[in-house]
Length: 390
Image 1 (spheres, helix red, strand yellow):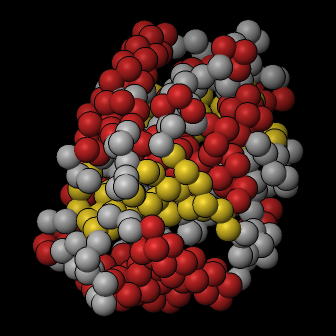
Image 2 (image 1 turned 45 degrees about the vertical axis):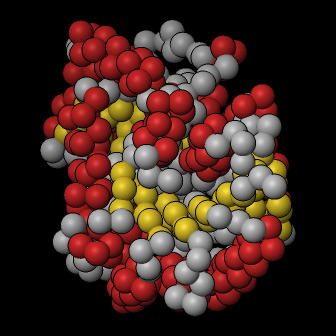
């Protein structure tokens, strides 16, 4: 009988976290070709993931689906927490019936961390690997709402309940470093770092070139206050004259949360702000951009990775961003792939100079660094790092 590894996604539906989950599933399948790899997730998530996988390399992969337990349009904490807990129980039961040797949890909410690790106090005969994402931001107390502080306490308690059979993965060396004063050494010793995995393959018919003289700058992904997404509207007002003369264009690609409606202006074009966008349509719009702009600072991106910057690298679009620990670490480690600015004023100067045709040599360096980054950090290379952890 083949040994079994179960990978469970009990939080996300549809195409959410599709890239990172697809990569982890592929890497585990590649590393253990003689074992049965069982991926358990919501039905539409599995359908999307199947399309993204190279089947020739994943012949040992099986799928178990469940129906989604919450409505994305009507966020309900209670349903999310209860639903995730039920799916954790079902994954554990299914794994036990299959004779599972290792459980990999691709994402957990803070309450999921607590619930799982509490259950594992009574079931210590199997190994568990938990991948950490944005929930780590709850560990920071400064400038947090009461509910966020509570989630942080629940997460910290859940991690402290974990036994030596449980390991953690963070998606960047700087994140592990930043965690050193947030969690105890007992947990930190079982926490490992790998680069955020990403599939950098791009279909040839997706690649587009902006031949106009207009500089197109876009913010991608869900637009929300916690990402400082409102800054793009003040930026558009600053460059209003250039926008009206078609010298610069600012766009958003992705959902715009209602909390940003008060800032909106016709100076910023919106794509898919109110509707679902498929991965293919999302990529197509991004590929038209000259630069992707980020306003993340350390209030939101000190303890988690940004999948959006890897999408920028994948599509060969350089970035303009406010500095944050994650981007600083990425550029220091692998070379600059865009402009990192200390302030909004510095960011405005960069855009003004780009409009005037400057930084051509810098752009060449950015492009070369992105090409090299993709070559050095493909799935096969990252899988070798994962092998030393599992």
